[in-house]
Length: 303
Image (cartoon, rainbow, N blue to C red; front, side, top):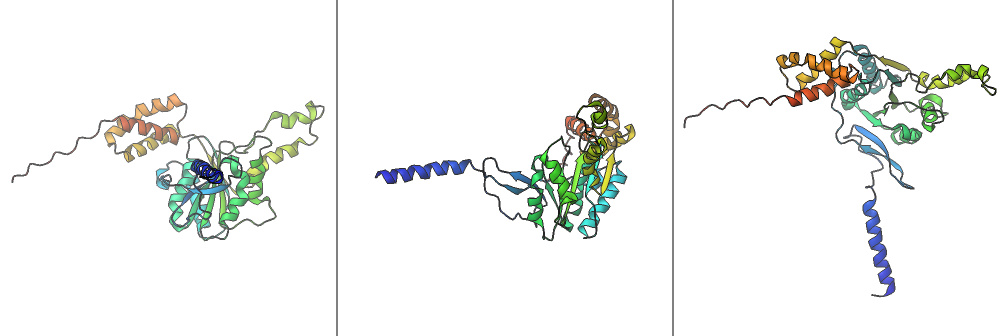
């Protein structure tokens, strides 16, 4: 083997090792007919690019599983129905207490309307600058796409803030009629508001002469969502009702559900919250510790 052949052999071996370390190439056009949920992913490294990754096992929560948020559920269900029926519909911002069903409500909408053409694309806050690329990728398709931004909040100067602002209604390009944005946040105005915003003009040598305009800028993103839904902590009876629903779904008997009430309240007290998430976590823990039901005895058959 001459030197050239040796060099080519080594180069092929090196390329094979490098190729094994790279993530598999994603198809340019995902299978929107058979996959309902997707994540926007970025490959690490220079020139990695981004793509839509199908979610193999999407959350199976249903609208009927969500209790004591009837008004919020009715409004987002109606808005989503208008969207899949190609009628006017709004971008939605869901804000309020943690664990009260904001994210679950969006996932349940997917399960309720997927067979009518609804698709969900989850985008991390760090990737919001890619929103124009995502919209271009799905524009013109017959399916209806909800871009899902979970637990959204921004600090000053973050690039994703302006990207989302433009995507909602700030670009010279018309919004794609098959795309909406559904976002959740614990903060209604998405950006922190400080006392200095109001006091800066009088307490700083170089303060903003128009502090009111700075405040308007901070709340302007929230106002670009056409529908706002607020969520509140649950009352004790509501929390216990949610616990009972999940225990029943795990196969607990009415007597076991009644016996679990005191433990459920202690569980919530230990976590400082009576939320749907806490109720779900307690139900999994409690039902998982119950002894398995004895198998029914088989009848003796005479031969």
